Structures are given as structure tokens and as C-alpha cells.
Length: 228
Ligand code: 5RP
Image (cartoon, rainbow, N blue to C red; front, side, top):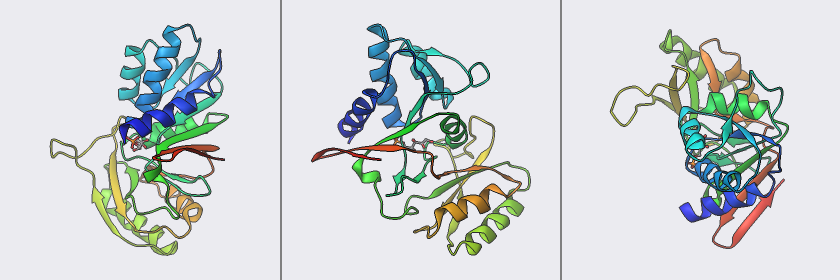
């Protein structure tokens, strides 16, 4: 599986050109991309990156990649990131690693997003992977009730679980928020649900990435499949 992730990352690297401003994703697949990009940088490639998490910032610096922020540059040329699920419309569920907020800000600031994954992430309909919803701790129960109403309005339902870290304590994102993972099974209308969730005051961001990815690079046992 890890080798497939690295193959997808290597294929995405072919789209990187000298002088590009890059969004750097988070997760085990994106980490391969950062490492391979670092090899190219050390061989002379001139790029600058915006990391989507503190973990990716550390990895990128370790690999010798120059970093900047979205305050210092206007747009990014390309973001390369992983995903938890990818559907045929290239809509995604992201946030399994808890970095969905910065990931979505960076992807939205990019002219292009390539999503890289092993082909187990390809699904006919989103929702088998629990949908991460990043919330502010204040008013959690009220926010969860509003989320449940949004689910009902878009024809889905399921258990919501407050994410815990490996230490058993509540998981806190890089932005200081909490994550509720919603076990929905199958999301019937992802764009509609995305809009409903975005309108809830206590929701900071949700893991539905609608219309952001322009290309998916999927690595499987039979080789690499590119969907655009
Ligand atoms: C982090 C993410 C990751 O891209 C997603 O969880 C996929 O991770 P991996 O490449 O480790 O399977 O959205 O917030």
C-alpha cells in the first residue's frame, strides 16, 4: 500500500515545474510527495511551498523545501494532496488526518489540485469513510444538533463521534478546534450537504471537497490510473 502511495506521488511530481508555488498536502501519501519533491529540490528544482499542517511544515523543512504563507503570495499554481475517498466527479472526503481546514484553504487558493491515492480510496459514492466536521468547542451539543438537522435535510443520518487522539484525549486540530466524525454510510447529495454544513455557525469546516480536485492519480496493482 505504501509503495502504491509513493507511485501516485511520483506521477503527480511530473506536473511540477520550475518556479511553481505549491500547496503541500497532509497524510501518508502527501508525505511521499513532499519527500520526492525534496529530492528534486536538492537536485536544483526551484519551488516554494505552503504546508497544510504543522506536520507537513516539519517534513518540508526537513526535506529542504522553501516555505511561504498565503499572506505572502497571491495564488498557488498547484496543490498535491491525498484523500480519504474520491468519487467519479472528483469530489472528496478529506480530514482523516485532521488537517481539513488548512487543506481546504490551500486547495481553494490554488489554480489546480491533484489528488493522489492508492486505488482503495476510489468509491462510487462518498460516505463509507466517516465524514470529518471541524467544530469550535463552544456549544458542541447545539452544533451537533444543527449538523444532525443538516444530515436529515440532505437525506442522510448516522452516528457522530467526537474524535479522540492516541492519548485518549479529545483530538485538537492545528487551528485549536475539535472534530466530529459522522458515520453516514452513503452521502446521496454531497454538494447539497456541503452547503448545509457550511452554513452552521459552530462548524469551522467540513471534509467534503466539492469541485476542488481537477485530477486524481490512483495507484493500484495494475498500474496508475489518471482521472480528470
Ligand atoms: C488529512 C487528509 C489526508 O489527505 C487523508 O486523510 C489521506 O491520508 P493518507 O494519505 O494517509 O491515506 O485529508 O487531513
